[in-house]
Length: 504
Image 1 (tube, rainbow, N blue to C red):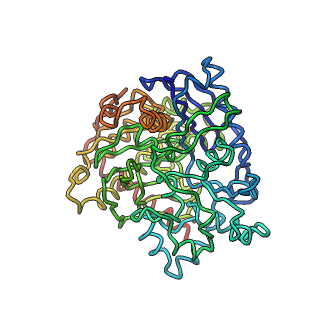
Image 2 (image 1 turned 45 degrees about the vertical axis):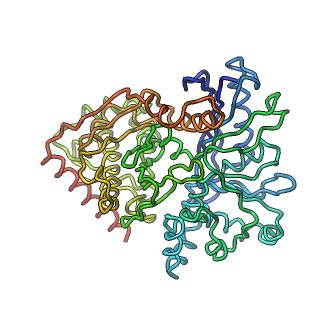
Image 3 (image 1 turned 90 degrees about the vertical axis):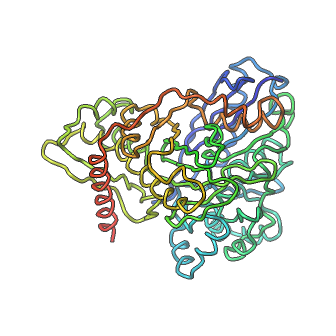
């Protein structure tokens, strides 16, 4: 058994990847699935799509590589976080579509809970904000809106889980109802300091605790697959939410290390070590990973729109045919124009957390065209990342660590589709005034899941040896003059203030 099977279950597709003992990708299989939008601001998945694409891609990647189950030492899982599923304990049948992390249907519920002062309780226990983004109010909505659901939950007939729990349940034939600490930490129901589900929050939201999964380390025994799935049972030995898995894959194991993933959105995580750091700047305090019963904490900032802004150029404005065209266009932009795009298409994430504002463009002239829009789109990601890093510096400045006290003292490790853009990464380095490193192995999320499973099964090296093997494919150094940097960031801040002000 010399291979690891990594399952990467994402928002729009599911991938399965086979890694060897050197953490080299041997084969990949991927399947997209349909998104459902039953009402404005609502986003759902068919629960069966999440499972069937997982089973199909696992079988597909094994077939593509000519591999049998006997050759696979373990399975690691990484997944879209916060997405909420409820199913029958007896049959495994979902009682509602999965409510996706992007879904905003519980905005009014969150507002009401904030008004009564409950956000302080949520933040104190979970490190999170009271926002529809997280699983807790999504779960409460299902119990309130599916006929008979709450009574069945109280009777112990229903299971709740994030996507990892749903996959483990199906992989093991209903034998295991489990999650890991990183996914639990994103539900808004888990006390990240005490390492247990919060009775206080569950009671307030009307969630019976008997429907919650057991929480384990990221590298742990999560059962084994049904023998009929792949021909022989395969042990499941690692789970982490996608952004935490990317943090692991980037080997950000020391306090002060930073990673930022640029996919549809952007997620930046700062390792803060063994003690949680409470944010005063509306960042999230979360669990980066938990090994041997010991959690390592992180500050996290979430940007809703990163790569999605390039999709908007393609599908909305139709000024490009493919994402790769943005770099060439951006390089052609008129340097005299300062067009700023605030991509608040679904509101603004950290550190603003304003769900009501919408996108805006500033500085347009008669000469503004596709090139200026392309440059503004790519630069918006750099500006938003600096917002996150400024908040992280402010939050962590009071600690004994000095890595983030000046903007130039930390290196940012990047991954995700947009990290392939040389223009975007150079601007990112310029605007944050820090080096940016892109790893040689871009599949950081799947790599993190593979390492968790492989290290637990004894196939892969320990944390220290794994970190030594990390290497950069490219390094971007800041070259923008300080005065220009400060002026451009100040213009961005004015644009954001105006965008929020327009929303009222």
